Length: 328
Image 1 (cartoon, rainbow, N blue to C red):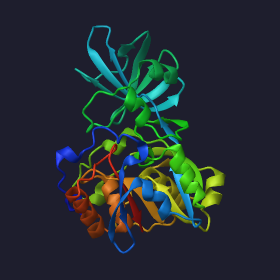
Image 2: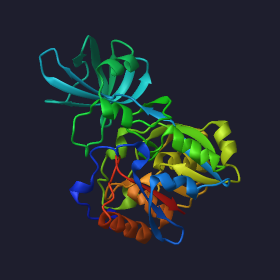
Image 3: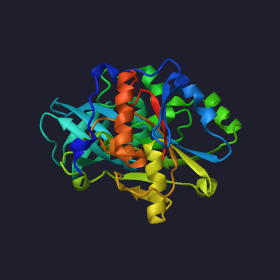
Image 4: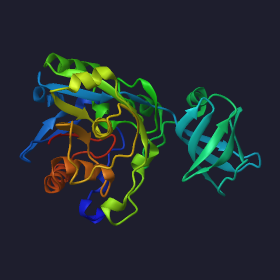
């Protein structure tokens, strides 16, 4: 199976650069189990759920992971905190004129970050103070690379779900961005149960697939935790995962028997789903692992046809774009 089999043509103007005026104002493409397509509004979602459903949300919270600093010599350095390991220790991507070596210091405001070594593409960095408050003071919202404007106050609010609670993500679980409190209540009033888990989305979600053969790709690792109450809420019910991150956490737990840990689960056509019956998601990049995931969920031909339809109907794509509800 080749990566090139998961490609589609996307006009650049369909990549959403800003969110819809209101969270629930996006469009919704419904792909039913037979592959039929229905153009709806996200406001129609409650009519598509009922007392059979458990709707599972990822409550990770995006941290202001991108820091800009300088070396004592004056050179500029970008530090992108990918994972906080301890109050003052992190793994980070670093961009500088020359690759930083162990011992390199970066000045960030009144704090200091010291490179301790490499771990693959990432650097292990020790900060002179606790990282989380430092990010709040000096960090910026880590918008995806295809969003071209500098992060502003609107992004700080809208690139975050209304139910975000557990800090640790460097990218938003974007399917959840469409919900506001009133929409969640409408879903609940339809009889559906709401449940939560946490998967901290890593920067690897934006990394391109650099191999030709799908099976040769190796996924990045992400931390997840599923509470016992959520495991109980999905038992014997129709499970609607809000986002691919939620789906990966649920399927990882089913595959390993572990309700918490790290997952590098790579889902592509041929995967046998054990938990998730319905998936709410945004539109994904060509040749991406997330496009492969939805093709595994509903069939490659069906999904590529749905994507062609979305392009023809001028849906908005990617993180700030419109949504799909896909039936397995």
